[in-house]
Amino acid sequence: MTKTTPLHAQHLALGAKMVDFSGWDMPLHYGSQVEEHHQVRADAGLFDVSHMTIVDISGGQASEFLRYLLANDVARLKHAGQALYTTMLNEKGGVIDDLIVYRMTEPGTSEWFRLVVNCGTRDADLAWMVDCAVRFDVSLNEQPDLAMVAVQGPNALKLTASVLSESRARLIDGLKPFQGQESEGWFIARTGYTGEDGLELMLPDEEVVAFWQALIDAGVKPCGLGARDTLRLEAGLNLYGADMNQQVTPLEANLAWTLAWEPEERRFIGRDALEKQRNEGVPTKLVGLVLEGRGVLRAHQKVLVNNSGEGEITSGGFAPTLGCSVALARVPADTGDSAQVEMRGKSLAVKVVKPPFVRRGKKQFS
Amino acid sequence: MSNIPSELKYVASHEWIREEGDGIVTIGVTDHAQELLGDVVFVELPELDAELASGDETGVVESVKAASDIYAPVSGTVVAINEELEESPELVNSDPYGDGWFFKVKISDPEELDALLDAETYAEQCESE
Image (cartoon, rainbow over all chains, first blue to last red; front, side, top):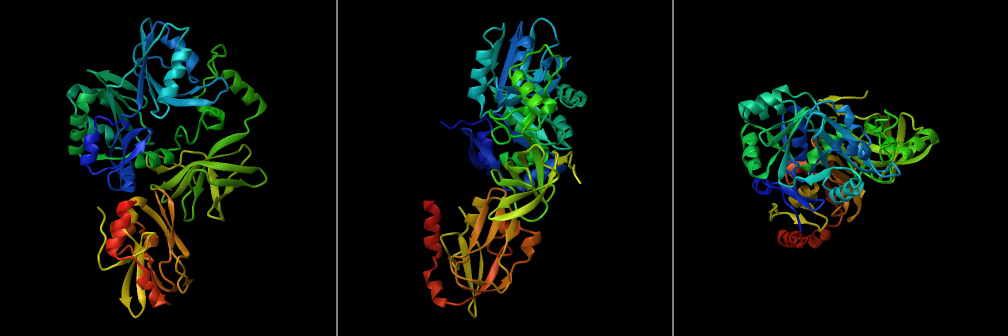
């Protein structure tokens, strides 16, 4: 059965083109996904991301459990409200999912963390977490009654604060990037998936419609999954299932920066396999491609690298901020700064760059 | 429901054809097609003076969603191309039957026009998709 978010009626009333996304009926765009993309880079856009899965982890060993489960180290989160991006790996070092973990309470006895994971991997994630949790004193509680909205763009914080109570507005004012705080049943975090400043807000289902409408009245424009995808692609942020999966490790997915190798004694799941791969050499890497001519790079197109063999585009598309096409591609590890992509029988020259392509509205490569 | 002007002819691959007189036709893609494509970001058109045979692949529309071939709905010689589309491909979305036209052909076989679909038949096809 198709699942819908508490904002489903709003999407239909706004004339959204709806698509199936991992079993959820979600808005692709509300007219033009390119305009929605520009809206986020220039001002502020509003996304319904209530399909994402929220899991709260609590109990006496919550911290120990997550230090075993996740490749990044929650011990790096020294205070309530801090967040980090991490992968969750299988024993072979393959990526089961990527997620954000928020520390909800100060380090101490009754610790509580909140995880936001992908909806497409929800069942596999929960099953894995439950399996791994057996020997820990923890409880896992999914929060299906929380809606989630992302407000992204240079004016996102200001406009969101303008429609909220004084105490919540003050909270937003005090948030540093990658921090989140609770406020009367809401959780407000300065995180996102667009390469812009912005917020992600988790709030009770029954309050989200009024909040959504207040943001629209304040001039924040609704944006669909189409713009969400081009924004994250420009920002060089991996999409689970496209740019990484259980067959690739974080070292092959441009995510080495998310691995906490220290302290050595922390034997997180997948660590042995990663150490082995690091010692033996990583065969491939995930890079950015830029096509300066006409045409659009798309997932699964073949990448030809001089003297090094072949690679494949994992996700690609038109980058509205740049006016040309960009892609993420998995290529041989020794690939240099140029390659060719096969497109409809032709071989087109592309530039190889390190993502991101765009950050805070600005081009990041030359 | 998409707009399907009654004065135009259509082909099943979602191109429209307008007779301009003197054996010249203008060709573009339908409102229904642009809705399916989403935002158009590049249009690759045939060369001026190119000789087309009906059914040939003569160009490509690249949208945010996919690359789609443009098929020649009739045979003939390309006598004009819409150069505006190079700078403003979004015209295909905003005005598919007007400023978003693709190219004009001097037709070589006027009888081919009889084989084209009328608006009603094309609308039925869109409905059944």
